[in-house]
Figure 1 (cartoon, rainbow over the protein chains, first blue to last red):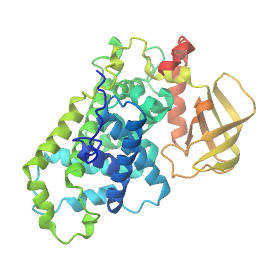
Figure 2: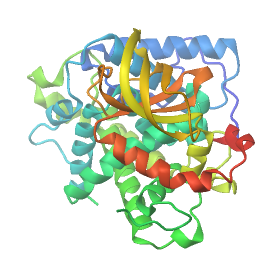
Figure 3: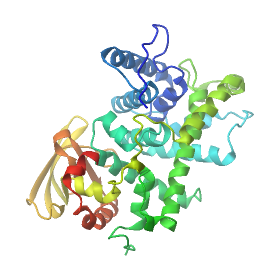
Figure 4: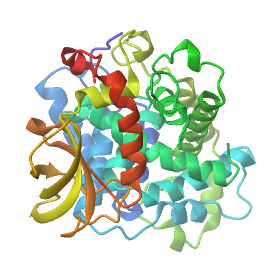
Length: 171
Length: 228
């Protein structure tokens, strides 16, 4: 069911309560930590521009798509100097309460390493399909590409991942 | 030699595509080892990204500080200890795992015309393999000209084939192919610059599933390609 976008108050973030997810999409897409605030600002401006230009039916989904695009542009425009996997390890300081099951923590670490290996375009598709949970037609529509392109790239990326998961006994 | 069933499809590749897209797999595929493995792969992928997302979403610093160099580990612990932060993390995982992100309200599984891999081949304009004879850069895209050695779709084509707007090789090292390098080109939509390129060992694996999907793709009306 389509949700019409409510015009944001000037001081409210345009992504509503989804700031955490927007951040995660940016970081998973390759935005360096020190650039995160700038990238968030870019997402905010793009969302405000688009919301003033017309109706956005699902603010949460659209903000994730915009964040993924900002991440791809960031990734292309600057040399990647930080690895996502390294960042995740740094976050896991000794003594930090472990809120996730050990298997999920291992999967998260592995996924960070796998995303590091992928080109920006494939990172974007994996994140939009399996983290943001958009369908293939939605992704194709949002990115302006053929559904076959989205399917082909996802099939390629997930096929590689399947082999690695299997080798490591994760599935 | 891959096992061929289900109208010429290789079960692992086709099952994986159904798992990726969420399209309804044919009854003959239900309960097979291939489908179970494909589903487990996608489930693990979703779970891993949800876990990764929850850590990144909640632990990302407000300030532009590199956590690897941040001396105050206690601050990281405080972030994790905030109840609202944990609640947000749970919500993120919940949203991702629930698969309930209805944007348009249409579920691909509801579409009886979905044909997964054959549909992908049916809607590709050109699938050709050959050796690169020239490459010209166009920003982060490039045009590549091939000495074509084999066409999959159409059945035959010109000896010299040029594709514009090609992206960097999928899964490759992030560089354009060199002259003389063997490549597989898949033109999904030339008018909109949807061109994929494969190099190295990816050529054989990608060619194999597309070749296996070719027989079924011939029964698909090109008018259905709006949905592919």
